[in-house]
Image (cartoon, rainbow, N blue to C red; front, side, top):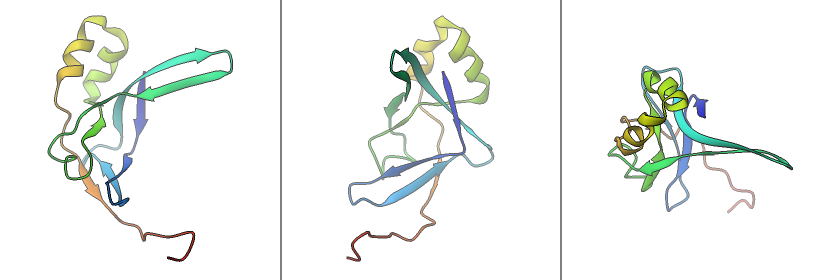
Length: 105
């Protein structure tokens, strides 16, 4: 499956939250897997080793597909290995929020 999102959040070891997105793209195409179970449907976003834009925050990141790879990911069995080995595109990050605490600490 392909999961569409405008971006995603990731937290670093200090619990600081960052929003990652791709400049110039209205959506990210993230590779995933989907399965139906008796008690509901579930999906996972596949991850890969972090690239240079993600490494300062975390050591892994979602497997980002280029828009042209999304259909291949869904329909072409032979392309999966190639896509799984590629380095994801560089992303932008921002922290446009105020850190809040439930306990006023």
